[in-house]
Length: 172
Image (cartoon, rainbow, N blue to C red; front, side, top):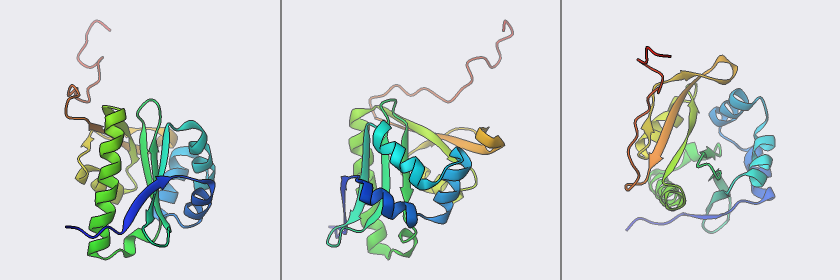
């Protein structure tokens, strides 16, 4: 049995403040590139507009290490603290297990979770794919940056590939 170092709690303004100041640099850049705003601005807004926002905290001290959530449309997101990179192997395994438990719970609510990852954050892309996400082809998006679409599908959800419905249609 894996030692459990982390648990999930509902996000609070205190979590937002802490994680805004201690976010992983690659996540700070991704937030700014995709929104033009600071992590704090984006996270404060998420508390109001998201269906669910949660924080993964250390079991005994309650220190927050990640924040994530999803909207009513199934748009999911996840951002980490700068301390995640310092985890030992047992902590990484426990952290990932907690993240996967949250993903499993979210897929019970939404059979399809999706979003886009900024291509300038390759670790985020690799991690998302390793958690079972299906990646689409990179696209040019906000601020002329390249983004990789991804989706998580519940097992009973119809598997619809990423395709352009207008592609190869000579009548359009």
